[in-house]
Length: 261
Ligand SMILES: [Zn+2]
Image (cartoon, rainbow, N blue to C red; front, side, top):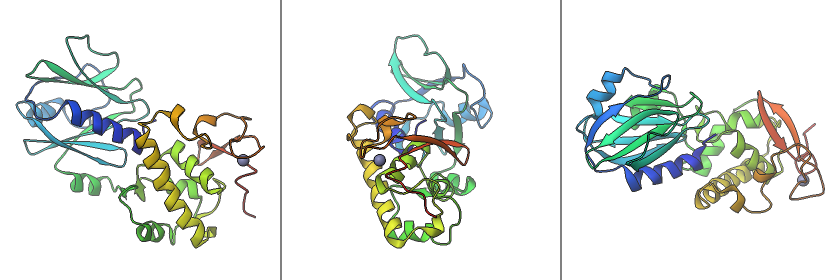
């Protein structure tokens, strides 16, 4: 599932392909992803250009020469494809044609991706009660978000209303890098734990962006390529375990990440 680092890549991709060209046409080959009527998208986008992109958490915003922003949420399997003289990719939900003959497809195999229109990023953030972007947060802001937060730490890290961008895979990685059990209670973490969590959060996200999401190129002591039951822990002689935390499949090493009593 695309999390902050993957959406950062889609941003880079959109920047390199789809900006500053006139939109000539739109079509909607797939169903179930549009969060506004088709005619609203047509009205907002036809004849306009994308001017700039922004990312907030797992959302990608494409600003236009008009009044609206186009917003993508990639769900479990979403991606962008920019091409010319090619058949429409399978599972395309929205297709944007440009005057230069190129097309930008929002492709989503499963229907969990979403496409919105928004007045602006701040309005959208407010409307959807989204927290600040995980990479924009300062340490003191992160600490104060966790202060007074009760319940499982993994739940807090993946709560998009608290901080935006972290999902199942990267939250497991941060906790693993800190040696914190995914079921630990937020209120039981020490100040030092929380500071370490902040620093590993940044490190893990920045590393993943730098490696362009290529998991094979992640450092060898990362959990991410060992997300399998009974896999060898890359840091100790323990075995990786899979458990459910807040309904999500969670991987951790019981020797590196001891449960608090
Ligand atoms: Zn271990």
